[in-house]
Length: 177
Picture 1 (cartoon, rainbow, N blue to C red):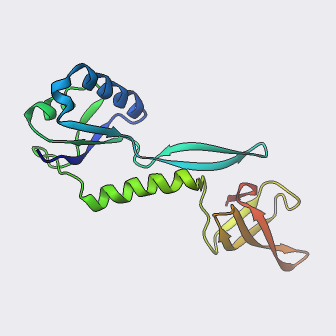
Picture 2: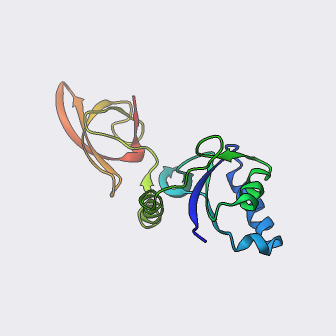
Picture 3: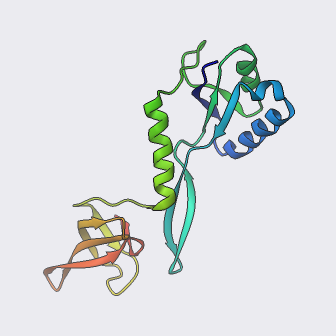
């Protein structure tokens, strides 16, 4: 029995509810449990600053999709397809296509990495136009010169009294223009 990872398309926003439904149905059907190992929703940890406090939250990598590790046969295919909220498998119309081992490894490693070091909610790049929304330079516009997303800081070039001045700011103090 060879188990592979398959991607299941769900109604967006109902991923958690559908995962719980699948888990509950598997508990009630021990004969299917040997064919279906895991049901996961790929998520990442993100950090953001609200009201001056750092908040860690979760965001789905692939909204509207769930990953299932299973041995695909008629029973498991029927079980998945007839669960409310599931619109189908990712693949051809008649045959779901399993993920490669490399794809699964990348998804799992990305999940683990963000658990240890949450990524900022908004990512910034060099030469991007921004506006300062908090701090002593509020309402100044500038250009990002350098980013240090691990520390949540960016170096911004702001024009003060007609001179370009580099300023280091927190990512939560700026927004994209």
